[in-house]
Image (cartoon, rainbow, N blue to C red; front, side):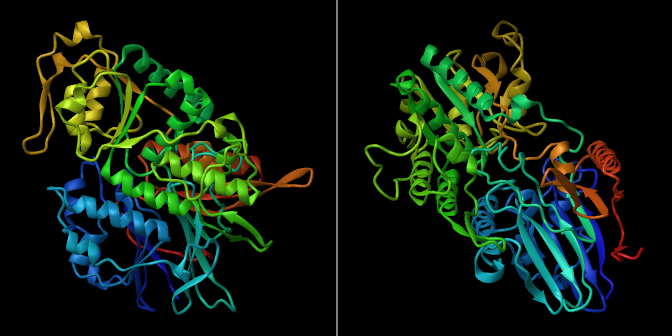
Length: 546
């Protein structure tokens, strides 16, 4: 058997993940991810589907690493163009992708329709999310999933081919890798990543391949301190702290942190109003609550562990992760943070620390959308809203009015692409109101009939709540490739592979990651070959003997 790989994207880019694999002898032709490009110079051509190097009718199946649209966003277009196969992914990725793709289908600049989304045949191997199991997808062709710590449902995927009784060849795709390690988790909910078994080849993302994230960005204490400072400013001015956030993962993390801050000092925030204005996040909250309740045996030691709920929740709340009653209580508090009623009554003397004891559900849901009465209401409040880049959804209703008052603050929580409303607000952050008065252009939303606001009238403070990134930095990416396991009084090193392809990043990031991998490998007496395929890559034969 001769397996080949072609890197369709992204090479020298960050969005639009899609890798094509084939074995012409066996009639295998499949994709790993098929995502939209976002903000790339070639986005219009790629997203239209007219320049794809493959014919969707000939693709047998897709392996989907996670539900972000830069990884799954063009799967409906595949079906529209004749693909009839299966999309293999975790249960949680299926549920999130159905929501996100359904939402994307409603946008005016999307080429596919809701009916194309409804045609997708998602399938979770084994019927339920399991990590490390071998799942056949064709004769002598198998896949394995390992949690990647990026967002709910995200995995690294290993593909193996050949007779299991003799010699198999394998390649592991990192997918997007999350920050933090076991017992050093960063995000409020995300459980630490799992290191896949070594493979003959590896494909690793490099979004932050040349960046070292400063300690203050990876420390939850510092992140919540910055959030508390922003909430304190709203308490002082009596205004609104508006937090635009991505509906997937980011909103859930922000909601948990706000509950944590308030439970740490309830008297301080008495009288503050809390509003969630994100219909999509409401649905994702429901999926998250269900996923966080899941447990199962992991590994061959018979231990039962949560699939997605991280140990950091137990540490933060002073709970014992191995106590079933404490697990139930932790899950109840997560439900409260995500606007859901507890599964069981909260005891009068709950287990855990003082934060656990003072935890209360805070948010009311903005069902009808902000109106003039809602916006004019006095008193300090926090409004968490979609979209993260401020271009769509409730942000269009809320921000034009909120931006006019110096009592208010807009706190952005993540990357805002060039040209987005969020990016334009970031440009105004260091500009004082006295200087903004000299501006003569408008802040205009692109949607038909969208609002327009003279930039000179923007008086609200603009800030950034850092520390919510779901991407690993350079050291964490290198650790995925060359991982140190504690062993007795020392440690041993294991490699994801001796041959590593670097994709999913700008060329500077790819080069920086390649150099960092080589440096660590050399320090440990290991040999790793790193490759940075150019676009288009052409076919590369996956022969371990070469």
